[in-house]
Amino acid sequence: MKCSNCSADAPEDSSFCPICGKELVVANAFKAQPSILTSHESQQPPANGPTSTFPMGVMLAAIGLILALLLAGILIFKYQPGLLDRSSVSLSQSRRLILGTDFSASASSQDKPGNTVTYWVENMFDGSPETAWTEGVPGAGIGEYIIINFNRPIFVDRLGMIVGYAKTKVDQYGDRFTGNTRVRSISVEINGSPSLQHTFQDIRAMQYLPVNKQSVNQMRIVITDVYPGQRWEDTSVSELEIWGY
Image 1: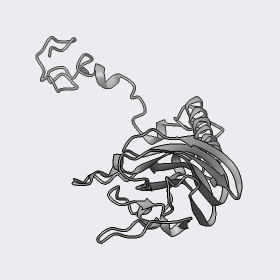
Image 2: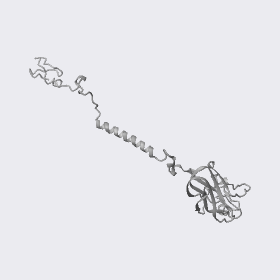
Image 3: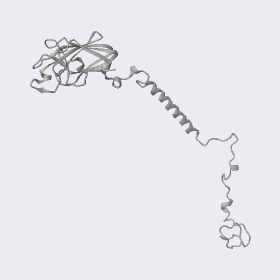
Image 4: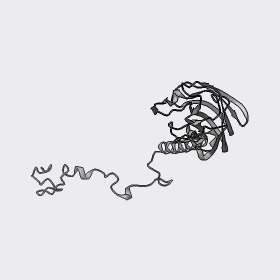
């Protein structure tokens, strides 16, 4: 750096010329600039006290968003089906297979057991199509019935039935399903009153019929027609399902 007074060379970090003692203006130009908030004393608070550096608009928007979310949460909880009132739960959420512990079953008749097989009512609820209830009167069993008594009032959504003896064993006696009489149609009485009728297909599979009845204490399922058997006149039902809650 050169001195502007005597043109003498001076070190870059010098504040005064070593020859004439003149202040080096160029070297000191940066130091001559006023500092900007270099100390706490230079940061004078306004007369009304300190203010937040967080923008007021952003703060108000955040508060509004929080309140909106809280309100939405309250409304969702209040009106979501099933959270406050079980009667409002949709059937698809609540229906289930009613188990034997929720009811008792009986029948107007049942066939005598064989050497290794039985034809009791409980066979319809054992989960196996290899067993069956078989009516025990002469003829095809039209007019025979099954009675279900529930331990408490039940909403019955639907019934399921395998309408014959679905045992898969085929021996010298032939196929048990086609050999025995199968249920073709039934009538259903709910709490002692006729409620519905239904006709089944002649197939070895579970078939369902809608019931959609509230406060059911008792059901009576009556055989009203049959598919004839190729060998026997014994009408059988391998499985009976009750769905509801």
